[in-house]
Length: 314
Image 1 (tube, rainbow, N blue to C red):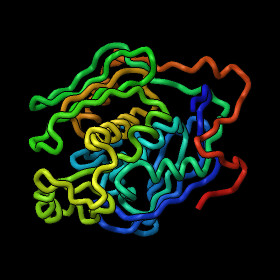
Image 2 (image 1 turned 45 degrees about the vertical axis):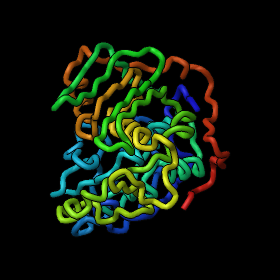
Image 3 (image 1 turned 90 degrees about the vertical axis):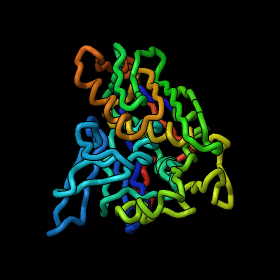
């Protein structure tokens, strides 16, 4: 679906689960938000009853090693936002308040599908203000240890080309190119789950990570074998999940991108780094409005029909 005007949810949506790293229970409520609000997280339940509002933008990222974290731990950070952010970006949602009562977005089944389902149940509405886009004007690239990520000009929307190479025959070298739309994300990426290697579990858990990981939310790899009884959801689920992660990280641009993202063996850190490099060069991008917004307002439809006036979806 596409709208020339900014988009928000028609009604609230609630999801509950636990953090893949913390293992702690957490709930989120997705609230409709006003024009030009952007995507913001409201962290509740902090010490002394405090709350903290954090904008979902690249300049709020405090860590990006195993997941993407916004805010700081001293005043209230929120981690593992990338699967939710990918779902919001791919659904063309411009304005939303994510209320969260813990430090980590619930992992759900390890993909974006539960978030997409919640969005579709809640429905979408067009707002009064024109959508704005971030258009890439010249190539911007970051490199480290032979890996790279880059954004280059591309006139026909947002394209991603992602390539990975793992030293196991089960994954090996995989490459995928996708022109991102709400339909292409739902058809090709939303169900791709996070994955991890059994050999790394003890080390990660001793460091305080992966405490909530299980076969219910992670594709577990032992050598060249998949431990999940159901196997893979896609033959190339690994590259699809890496692309899903990239969508979620690049959503931290704060605006939909008109450009082409390309990467080789990149991860959260380099996905965020290429945004930082882009915004550091004012000649590398421009912000443009959708001129179609001058037309009369029309409702925005999600893939699942929704009643726009209902008070909430819990």
